[in-house]
Image 1 (cartoon, helix red, strand yellow):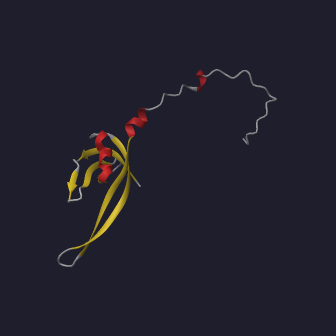
Image 2 (cartoon, rainbow, N blue to C red):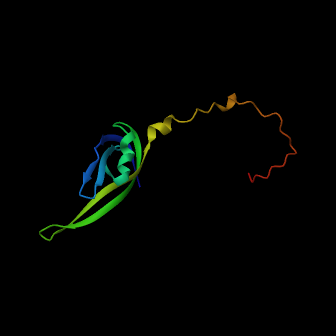
Image 3 (cartoon, rainbow, N blue to C red):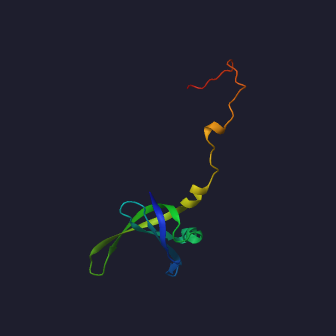
Amino acid sequence: MEVQGKIKMIGQTQTFGSNGFRKREVVVTTEEQYPQHILVEFVQDKCDLLNNYAVGQPVKIGVNLRGREWVNPQGETKYFNSVQGWRIENLAAQSQGGAPVPPADQFEPANDLNDEDYDDLPF
């Protein structure tokens, strides 16, 4: 699954527990009729993927949905969902890349065509 939009917020890397579990959050605002603010978590070594990004950048994030069950001290079962990121792409870099193609009328016509040349293309 993917989430696409502009970065609204990038959090600091947080470390939890004695084993050093790391988590970093980013909020992406989608660009649609009713924009959504989607919180995406990056964990462990994926936290570093956010180092080269800033607020306002258009991005596409590859995500997985995660769900877990928790029983509170009163014995009630609760369920939680999270959106976990595993890849992030800068969409601004893609739109700027590549040289523009000139119009077809600026190409010189091919004059060295031979009708006897064999062409095995099926179309």
